[in-house]
Amino acid sequence: GDQSEDREVLSLLAEAYLAEQQPEKAEEFYWKLLDGSPEMASTLLDIAKQYLESEDSASLTKLLKKIEEQLSHQHPSKEIIQLVEKISQLEHTSIPVLESLARLLDRFHLDSPFAVVLNTLFDLHYASRQYPEAVTVLERVIDIDPYNPESTTKLERLQGKVEPSVIRD
Image (cartoon, rainbow, N blue to C red; front, side, top):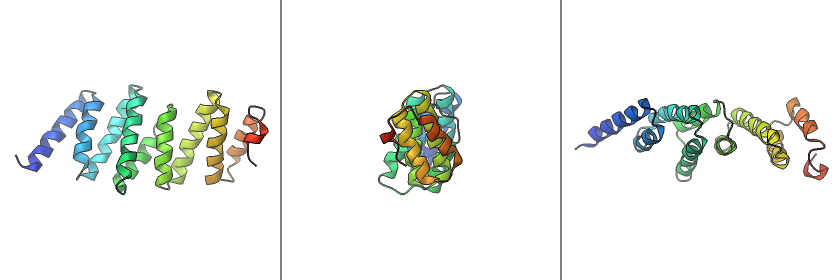
């Protein structure tokens, strides 16, 4: 059949899977549709939300890695940039998801969502007593936003938790 008919079928299937709360199956179709229809990116946001609702951070990490892979051989469309920014505004508790978001936002030079994601990462590392990782994240926060008073507070929280040599001035 002709291509537009095929796309219509793919689109209907994708919507049906999404409605049935089967985001993984829907996602497969949306990636096919995205090629040639960048506006489809907004639907990936619904998929991301379903992954979050079902606490499926592994699938969400995969989705973000797919975006990263795509960008290794093409420029991001404004739709993809908006998608990543919107996903970053959802509530996240998964370190791999946040690390992937951080890489993407850094790449898009979206400093304020990037700083928000890094601050969340700091809190998660700190809460899990992963202090050296917390230090690394905090250094990146300070690089973006050197005069943020919150960073000073975070540095104080880290004192006594890590060797002083780990924290650079």
